[in-house]
View (cartoon, one colour):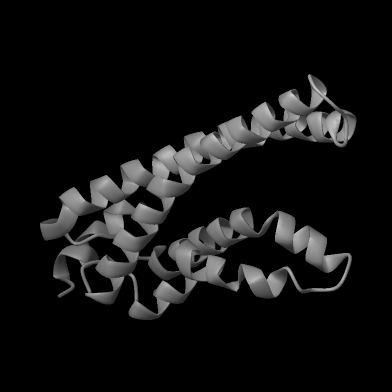
Length: 153
């Protein structure tokens, strides 16, 4: 994706790439914690100490891991949003609608969907928004070669 940033803004493109990479690594860590979180909720919910303390510790650790990925992810998405809106990339401006940060604004609507769709989409909405962004990214820039990029204004 940083290759779709115009050459004069490549430093910002690389920064955006690094921030998205941190999001992906932290996101992997969060996914590995789901099992521990689920087990702690299953066996410790409504229990007294020390089980309740374990549940709180697992939730706290999960939130920390989530935020360690979310903060750079949102910064990268906002940087991408600005670069696209100001024409500093080869993405068409309409692709800001597929920006993960913009798509995540729809999550309150998804939470209201009836079962079973609401649970499925709500639970995976962050991942779906990232997937939509990458599909749009590939589809809008797939046939763009380096020579064409150099000729674009």
